[in-house]
Length: 377
Image: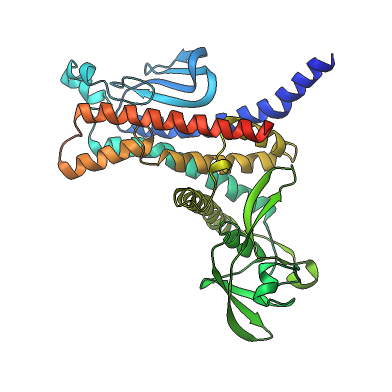
């Protein structure tokens, strides 16, 4: 009985939240492709949440097969004239179509219709994230604190740079700072990279160069990560802790900013991996997403929705990477077609899709290895 209870706890605590979050994000992504494809007059054969064998499904009046598939790690929309779920074109099938059939195929559609249809998936993910963040900001507001230093930690970069309690950090690298959270967000992804603080001390302003120290921290669930820290702390005695209420328009603006921050952080992290400044062990796969989903679910529905928003932005961004087989790879082909005035050759596309598939599989294997190492390392 104890064994069965542990299995039940694992399913309810981790798998169910993971499936809720991932299914929402995948469904919205594929719905973006589906809706814009339909508006562009492209016939759609399949709308699937998940890969592999079909669990349940039905055909609608337009001939589209809607289905839930066995492997819940993504989804796809298969258009008329596609060879497979990755939207690789079936050139032989399209060449044998009549003119009217070809007009309904994805490959036969105008290049701008293909661009809009492919881009709609990631755009839908960004819209979902903005909506979730905006609703949460409208309901709960945003906790903020003034960028005032209450304590300087011993042997920290801040102490070495000469910062003192009561200092106001007005800007970093010339960018204005409005809240203490702005400091954390700017400093955290820049360990061992010199930055310049503009400090207001008693009405006098001066610049202070400082190098954030690379430090390992733990979140409330015990997950470890490396970040940059300068060693300053604030508290309610100096920083005016408050909840900033936002009207709907302000909430949307804040939601757009939050989504952009996630994208910028992702770009920065990938760039730092490439130049060797960061380790790639923070790249996570489905196991880590399931673990985080279970942890966040303990905080309530609102926290789980915010995780869905973060994941939605991440999936939208990753799909825009210029890797053949991903949406970004398709968009690169269409950009070349627009410039050249004719499509990329069949052979070149076939080779590119094989390379793209290999890259995606290697990335998935690497992320899964990180997940396993994190759990059992």
